[in-house]
Image 1: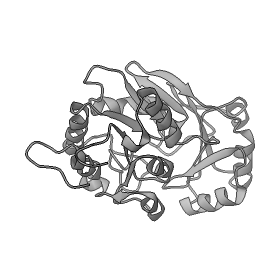
Image 2: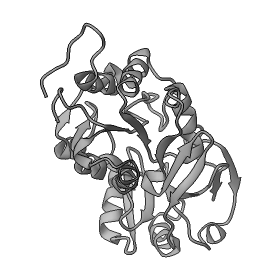
Image 3: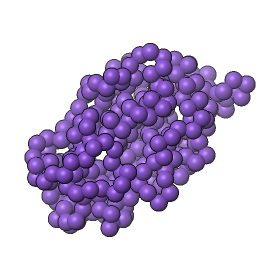
Length: 283
């Protein structure tokens, strides 16, 4: 990928990539900086596709698409939600691809070691079913209290397990020891575990989108900051880690840009889609 041949598809994580983290909390400021907004618009103006790719539920992603004016060019956009388990078109929100699995055994194995952990299952387009309230701001949409057995009694696309009394390192160790047979797992910044169907990741969701658009992965630029971005960064023709990413994310990336607080996503996009008069950088 060179500045003479910029990416045809740009895949962007949201939290910690497009949106800045609220210090000390597992949530983001729901605000896009002008630099990021303008950089994304230049990508669209050039005729490339911008695809939001996040662990968020679909109803928490369309608002970010609106802030970025992603659909300002008239066509429905593509969004990869729930770490690749759900792919939708927007607007209006229309699910076009979804992968589900039986999460009950994995959830039982985790709860056996973290009996006080919180469990959430997405209610598509509405919010979440939760075993008990999550910390304020961590889940968007409405939440409804339910029994865990009922929540995972039928196939689901994603399960979140959160233990406010544990650390991310605790969950990394837990996932490694359990193996979580029959599922793939992602550990977040905090003690937050995402369970997904085997083989499902942001990369698999983006692969589906790229196939629909007739775009080769060599022509994809992906930017992210979390452990759930690792497969996406490895899959894309160019994978770029945000400056504040943990080392294991930086290790798989082709390059590392500035941090989210320094508009690192805009810096990387400017490399391929420079602002008028700024020129690009050799790539």
